[in-house]
Image (cartoon, rainbow, N blue to C red; front, side, top):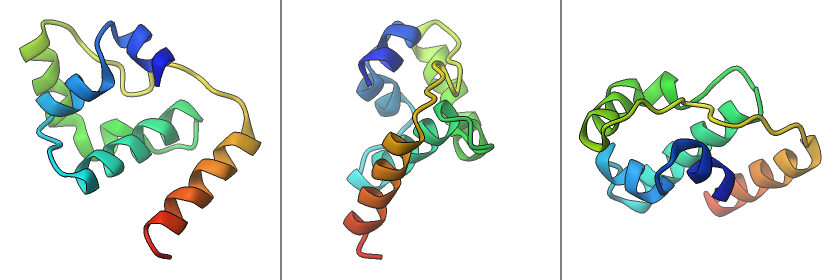
Length: 90
């Protein structure tokens, strides 16, 4: 997340806060879409959070790319997805 924060010029948690992601489930969902976009999987933060991301940008005075970095590490992605599903009880 450090690379995302660096690319955005803002802490990811602060951006999510201004996107009105308040509950753990909302934050997890937004993080899932953010990571999927960064891994280039055809879905991203913009798909479900475009209005919220624009709002955060207006509040914080900048535009935020919904996939601010590109990560090309499928093993890491598989681990993240597996953990996300396990943690969700699937």
